[in-house]
Image 1 (spheres, one colour):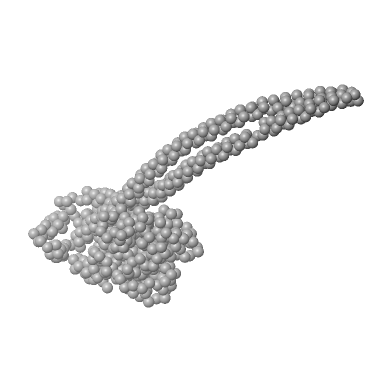
Image 2: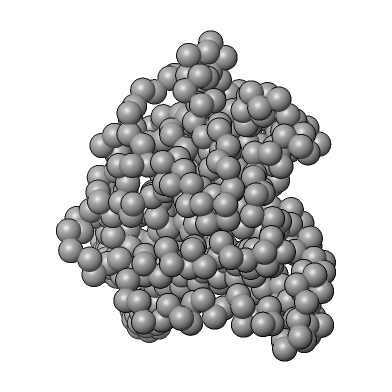
Length: 609
């Protein structure tokens, strides 16, 4: 009987069994008849199949994240279009106002010019008439002067004859009186003609009339200017909102680009796995396959994938043998796992816990750095094909059914989930002030669920019942290097976050965000938030998870733990919630132990403590 007939006939023979558990039990019995090499080859196929399946599910989850990004971008793009249309309406209105103002100015200027021209023409005519009258008066005065001269001459002549009779003086006197009367009359006329009171009155009337016109003109201009100012303020406001929308769109596009890069990376790994398997399978004659030849064909693929087909393989033994604990962490989680300066070693709450656990096991701690929402995926495979996977995740991980094939430890730390704002931004004082605002969070399923339970709604859940606060946008960050700058720079209005991630950033004077952002709330959740360690949900990880729980229970009693807690989150938070309290029947030590015992029975292994 050839290899494939022997290995898979047992399952075909069980096809009539209805219950899957019965099928598995029967197959366990059949598997006991396999040789050790056949068991090893079967295990190799099982591991490759499981890993490929997990990678596919990870791609599906990344596509869901991508869909959420696109939803937020679509919402913002729609709002951007609306705001641009509004700004265009304001601009059109301002153009109309400017046109009307220009026409009004032309009318007012024309009327003022006409009024001034008419008044000046009247004044010119009056002055001309006055000038003619004055000339006549002056001519009269000139005649009087001539008469006086003649009288003076006559007086001189009569004086010569005065001695004779003196009557000529009487005549002269009468003439002088007449001339005096004429002179007085002419003087009176001259005074009247030289009286410019009428001209002054006309000038005053012109001044008053044009002053009123100019005052009305100024009122018109001021009114139009006020309208334009209001319009330009509205335009400025709309353009500011356009800039805000553009900033959110660019931020989301950048995150979306990172998500697509991850999807492409997973696709490359699957492609390489399938290609390597194809090469191995092509070397096998399905009718005359020799088990050793089949295993040899798969060895290269398995080695590159860091998969051990030996059924007795144990993750804890592997760690102790290599002398290193591979820990998946996010390298940009300020306060948890970060570098204060480029080139320095990682530090933070999670880093301290990881080092303490490695010390507990008696091995070194090796960090595998990756974006936070990729950390659990590193339990399946390395970041790239050929790189080793992580043994454990110790990186701000709250348990969730969203993570595929993961088993969780007990909680190693409890903390508060808080809201932060820009320093002094009094618009936001609590979660209730987030209506119509842009909120940033870490791309954490637990955080999304918490916000939804609190009645917050955004584009991807806006139709769910129970909404009381509607966000303008929700940006879920996978790039943790942006989660402080996005708030400080005004891309988001507030940020919902685990306390340790913002405690150091807000409170430590060495932080580049000190004095720029601040925490404004106590715990938003009903119970304390908590982090767990996570291992792959395979039987081979059971003993590693058991050691992690043993360490957590022991470390809680140590002074070193209290020092770590106070350093990185300011206080020690107590709690008793665990992965068992989360929805989805999550796996923990008990579930892995059951899986481990079944595995040992299946492959006739002696369970280890």
